[in-house]
Length: 244
Image (cartoon, one colour):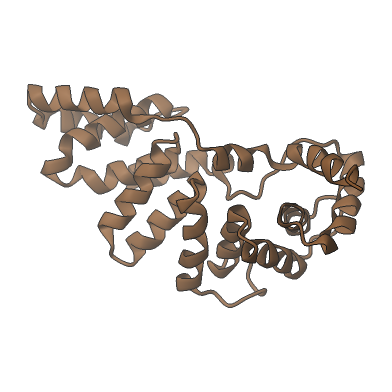
């Protein structure tokens, strides 16, 4: 567990839940917020989701988590997967005082985004299943996120598999990827890699090499869309405002 904790701590800033945004300059944020707010009554779920993000994070306006949750809920009801993820974050207790913490509701909403391909939702869903003792489901979702290059999911999956001799080659491959992906691989990880390597047969090592070579895949369109953050808002507004 120390290896996992150190890896997660080292990457926490880079892997915050879909709340971080980048793009517009500060002096344009209030304008973007006002334009989103003026379009929200149209019921466009993309507008509602982005308005929720502005309210959630206090971008261009004072933070208002209750209002943000309302926007996310409306967008999620219309089928917006990233909004569903944010509703799940609220039910998970990320923003206390707005809605009661409810693990079942958190899983239900985050699962929508995970199934649509969002890597952070896949990471969270795996963790929620792990807390329920459903190791197989946890590994499935961590693997989906790990294949998109998610470091936390890779660390959790490697740790989960490392104690099972049947998955030693896969665990070794994942730890090797962690070493490559980590800004500074902790000593515990390097030690664990050496320990696993000593137990592997030549065939296991060949299997691990095959797994490693084919593991990483392209990020899904939904993950890329989420990663755009605020940068996508001006184009969204422009497209809607020029409609008759």
